[in-house]
Image (cartoon, rainbow, N blue to C red; front, side, top):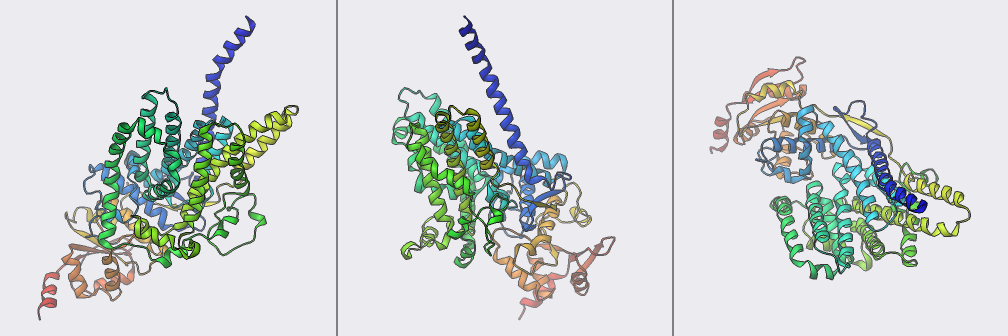
Length: 589
């Protein structure tokens, strides 16, 4: 009677314990995902975080991307690809990562008038989901709660994501982790001969959702993961699953194919039409070297004991994590581990190895074979990749997951070996887990101010009721350089003009159309009559000057009519007039 009563109490307390652990993990991951935002917590509606040495232009551009997705959703998606930059070019939104899932942040932008708040929420949510789904993946493979939770916490603070914090789309690693988790679970279900259709249907639908989320968050991650699965994913797709649920898999494939093609196909067409490709010398600069992996990440336990280098990145995930990841496959195959855990070990070992190799980019030439050039010639999208070193994100993610599995095996092995010293064992494992999680941590950040969308600039307010449909504006001075930092003012003007519903000939993106370089060259010669005529022919009717030199030059041109000046006189607005006669004079022999 007493034994049965204690058993009932134990079974009743189990769901409460699971709920408590889940809530605790949820809270810890939420706290860790907010750490990179510590520099903006005092003004989350106006500021976004950036690494100390990072460019302000990149996070500002990502804030503009969120703003445009929000504005396009408000318009019902009409003209979404025709972003209001590089006017009058078409489908300019395909020049860079569209990140359409950020349209879900439209209520935040609309309610608070802040693209910065939407940006900060998106960054924090993605870091949280990275950790949460990493812990879910390991739990599905049979790992215990604490080891899975430790891997989730480490995934939230993945070193390369913290080093590249301003590249917002890189933080969207969770669809890739989710897809791997579902494929592993689907393989496990396929081995259960008596399983019905309920479990495989759920897993296949989850897989479909993960596939759709991949391009909706980051096209580069979709392409990188697709290539990795093509090479190393054969372990994840058992033939038994294809034979048993072939029709179900085909239906799910067709379901996911449509939204994926709606995103990928326009981008491919635009890249082909404009001939956008990365030069090999540019890719070489952003390709990793094997020595990059021999250095611990910044803000880690080992940073102080390593020598300084001129290389821009430390791609090592951490020596302890790497040691645990190398130990994990040995422990898994030398013990009576589940088949799902063995499949996980094989998959992640291949996954990490291939990621390491591909991160070398043009430096990967075994036996003189130019593998990167071969991939660019035969794999769609690879010719547009510039930062080959970012394959290291998948290497680090694979190492963290393998290390989590290694900790789980160590927990089991030491339980019997130190059964007579439970307190020593418990203390040692707690220290090991804490070292694994906090071997590296988020570094110092600074903040960048983002223009508010509910506080439209004076010049934009003046133009709102005067710029007609199909017309554009040009803001001077036009950028003269090519580095990202040269475009900071341009991106700020993009945010201000988009918030006001204006289309501008200025722009910044991953790729630049030929018209940008032509306009840059022509403006270098000044506001000539032929340039004014060209602007008029392209329906660029308004010119805004933001500095005194541009204003003096505009005042001297008779084809420009002054309309408005700011209170300080720094900003002036001109209308392009009389250009038709100038065109006749230029074209008449």
